Image (cartoon, rainbow, N blue to C red; front, side, top):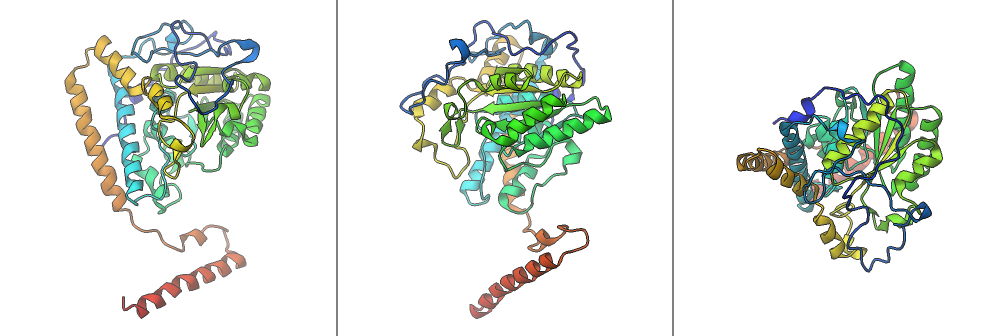
Length: 415
């Protein structure tokens, strides 16, 4: 099964000559700059910004599926075709199906843990499709949609969560780094990598993903400082899904996250994270800016985590259902489908074929996960040191004795 869409095969670069480091433009008819339906969670006054002004929000496609004109960012999606729009829709639908299958497998005991992206498909697919093949991506542990865009087989994402490997793919094969569990550390890795390719004179850019909670980490602040001072070609893509596990955004910041970039000396922009066209356009702008040697950009994709933080989390303990209901009305897949049905020649046959493809993907994911072989128990001790180490040898021997103790129990039980 291919994991590419027609949108992935477009290689034409759109020039953005003459554009400067804007901090975002207001889109006529913008909706969703406030989190609608917030109740009873004591989420206070973080919607206020410096001077009391509303945060600027780039939006090209409304929740109702209506196209909004935006002079600054329209050029980056001006020549997108109906086939490419259908490709974006396909990406989001299949990514959501894969994510739902992984969640189900965890509930069945096939995975130890899973971090769902439900509700964040537009942010990930839009930004992922904005990258070029020679760009490099540093994800967290939730960028399943970006991995899809980079051509990583989705089943390869599951080995780590099943406990059979430490990653499952070669980062050099797709310029997509292994998942990073340590919160925020990948922003420093991305900055260092970007500084390196700048010194090499490469015509490429780097994008680092992180969440609103990670924005409070010192690593992120250090990455902002280094990238600004060294003019690194990096885009910091923050998926603000409103909740850092159980902590709301106002516990992370007193101003909209994108405005933090101003203090470090580079531009920031807030985009409707449920608008795949807006995310595609803004990320293209930021990446092209980086490639031209204009330094870093902070993109805040304003979205919502529809599910739990991970499968070990219970979001009903800290947020109310009506908040989720309000965001369901802004669903990224539903709004693009509305646009396809009203503004393109997309017919029911396309959606039926995609449903069948979705079912096939679900079956393949289940089959591959259950067939994954158990790992070599001693592999963890290999390649720690190039020439071996006495302490590692001692630990290996202790672990071997521990493993052997289970064999004794099996013999006593007659197994």
